[in-house]
Image 1 (cartoon, rainbow, N blue to C red):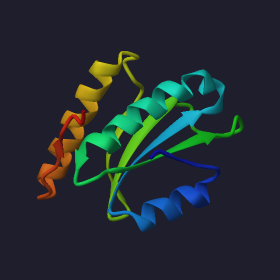
Image 2: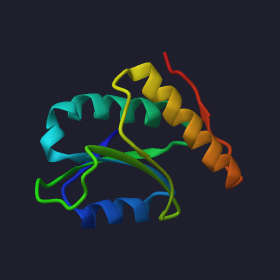
Image 3: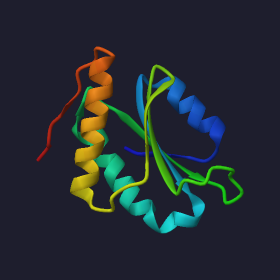
Image 4: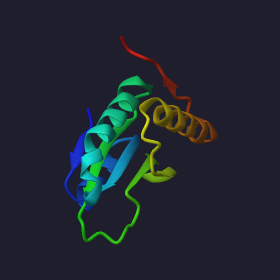
Length: 118
């Protein structure tokens, strides 16, 4: 289940409570993409073994960060993977994320599998 966090403190708390977390940071000016991002995160969480917890943080419009969307993977509280932007095609985005996540975690000696559930 994708958790929607309301502020940076909640982001940090969620990261601290979970071993592996993928957080999507969405610029509030791109709120129309929220449903797509939630679907993408839901699939990653549902198919990952061990489970990668997911969260969405919609940045306030006065945020200093310019990226419309960024996805950060945290392992034990440390960001180990970051991606800016999406392709906008679900299968392509899933493939790119899964490969990136698997490779970076493999380098940390953690094996992650993605299994489609029926």
